[in-house]
Image 1 (cartoon, rainbow, N blue to C red):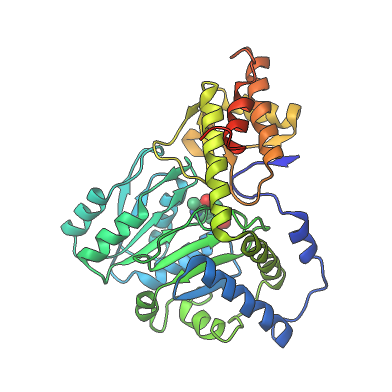
Image 2 (spheres, rainbow, N blue to C red):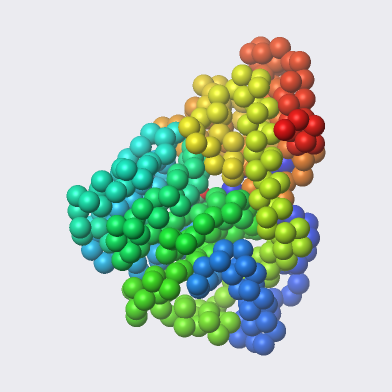
Length: 369
Ligand SMILES: *Cc1c(COP(=O)(O)O)cnc(C)c1O
């Protein structure tokens, strides 16, 4: 089965093998060396002042960022399930919040965010997805972060980059917390979260809040290449193997390939008449709006061995999402694109003429720019 869901993504053989060695103890020079090298490569990838690894899924890092960086009021953007989650976290911790809600295909704007900040001086943290995976939507986070900092540099900017980290180059100069997760572009099993922090964030964290997700305890330990609690040793070993792979290819080259692939898939699928759902698509995935999505998803799996993701909540039956993150083989994505075109023919929706494959090939092989 070709796993084409935008998380979890497939785990390459080399990475699986790196995680098949006997478990080592986390408080040993051997593991500390692995941890140290992993941090080094993460600093190179992300560029933040500090990096924290948490044994949790991405949501754990979202929770830790919200509780440690909000003192009076959290403003968050809800243009999908993951944005909505920031509000649920605030609610669970009885943190005051303001919600900015959008259709799942529509990005927020600098103006909307600044308007809220101007209205309410108690807002001291803003949380937003760089890529909102519910609709495959890209928010203009870098511009928003810059405008926020120009207004008030004490407002903490929390960016959920779970489907953006490792996908594209992110300008973190105005971002205080940037969140990643193992099962997306890093092509690892779920269970490890990555958190990049700015020096201003570290200052605000002080002695930290919460217990397991108290970032003060983790910062102190991880600076010495160990963790406050038992490290997710196996996943960190896998992460190191993946980062070494990215580094060998070159991070910029990984971004270039991802962008090219995203362009090729979007062009191929819109070229056969399918509707791209988000107004500003994220490079992490391609989201197609289609009222026959459940049948398409089911038959892609059954007839072509291709597993794509459905929508979520009220959009569950109206879209399907195809992963574009990580080191995806062109022949595999070509198979997925071809399968979709053949399936539309089998469903009697559009006569097959090979356009999807032609468009995909022309772009991916740079026959046309
Ligand atoms: C996958 C994802 C998450 C985190 O989900 P977990 O199940 O906790 O790993 C958060 N935000 C976005 C945008 C995601 O794609």
